[in-house]
Length: 312
Ligand code: ZN
Image (cartoon, rainbow, N blue to C red; front, side):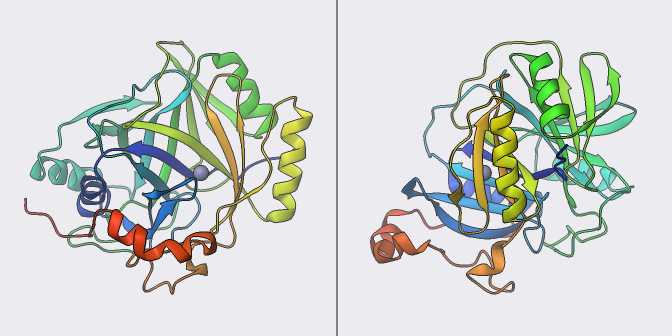
């Protein structure tokens, strides 16, 4: 029986890259840990945000496609991405969202309070306060470690075949069913963050991929040896899985679970300090070796972006 520790990263498609940076760094106070290109389409950015080190379980990555076109959140996708903050920090966040004119609602699920809002391109995001998980060491303006996002709380999955997705979560990924409430079943993985998965058990409308939707959710493998075991394990469960892809900061395999959601399994090592020092992470455009010869061309084509303090 194999067990993932929890979420490694979540990757989404968004619109304008500066709007993306302003929201996740400028308002949510996450660190832009890596500025690179989409390895499958190097003329566009791939931006990674996380804690100070870009630790597994904290990394949200974005493919900006600047256009007015929007995808549709629905079945076959991660519907909501949850971030976890320290206990007692939700009132700070309610005030901060108000200051930046981000509309939010308060909801309760499984006895926990959530602040729910959308990012500028329509992604559903929520904040929940929990004791588990170390505080981030990253500070950005008023977002200090005592209130800052620690990483993912988890995610809510919208499946077009919830029973089959439930089977994959427990039998393949090794999550444990811990609670049922209304339209949701809650699963738990062993890590302290990125470990709570809520599955919506009533199917709705199919999602359509595009800006404002999650592209895939990646689960953790502890090293390359375990990663290869995962690949075999997915195959043995009768699902088609890709070859191992070298993503520079981790190795990746992908498979689509029967409810339509694209799953990835990614290795914890080597991480984001492999090509620049921890101090410099995110400050310059980093290219994988196969695109280094195109640097001048790519730098002139990509729109300039910067992490900046926003006016309230
Ligand atoms: Zn990924």
